[in-house]
Image 1 (cartoon, rainbow, N blue to C red):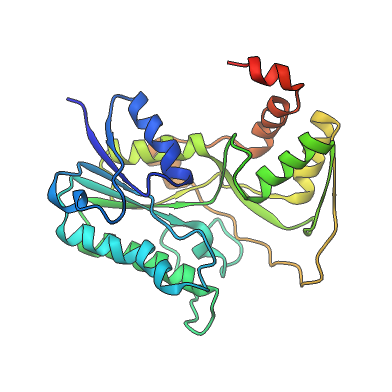
Image 2 (image 1 turned 90 degrees about the horizontal axis):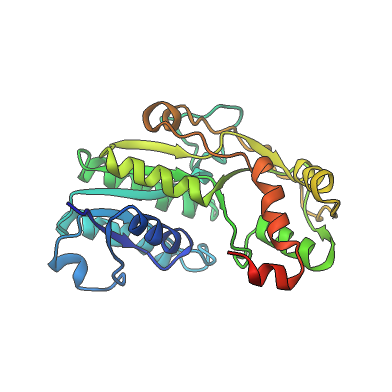
Length: 282
């Protein structure tokens, strides 16, 4: 029987990629608006909660809390669903050091720190899932998600877009600033596996590898000949991020995401072509 799936926040970056992924696997997908009565007057089946606030969260705390926890609370309390996956973020680990950091880590959170609004609201969403519907919900903590769409206003797409347009790029960033990158395809695969297995608890959906800006630039130069330079900003350099453990992702779901160092040459090569070649590509 075809599984019914509902994506809340299905028009965002993750949700808009997840919908066609699920349809290709035979799922019947519905993408209601966040304020739609359809969330509460019909069966939602498998829910993927992709809603999030992508603007300046500190400037609009009410919208941030509503997206990350308010609507979620109402869905968990009043909606009819079989299982729900809540999309959180490995940014909640930013105050930690070392690693690998497992999903049961304890967080240093300061309610007076404006930056921690994001962490607090995401952790509240996690708490709601794990306490209001512990037997039929799970949490996916995503690291820095990248894909083939270069129009996304994030660091890696911006870098590739500049390189493929101008042949060189100067980035206002610290060479040793690092991120854990996970490809959008691996994210969709992990979410689908969590749903198929009706997993509970928390999963880190990450690569398990922190890659610095310097390492990215060297990889780009050696595989494409395109040069990246960096001009550090006036602010203090960021603290090294913790390493994220993906042991649970590997052992329970059988997924080991592709390294960005492996994926990057193909992404650059696809866009670093004459326009007519890109238009003729399948």
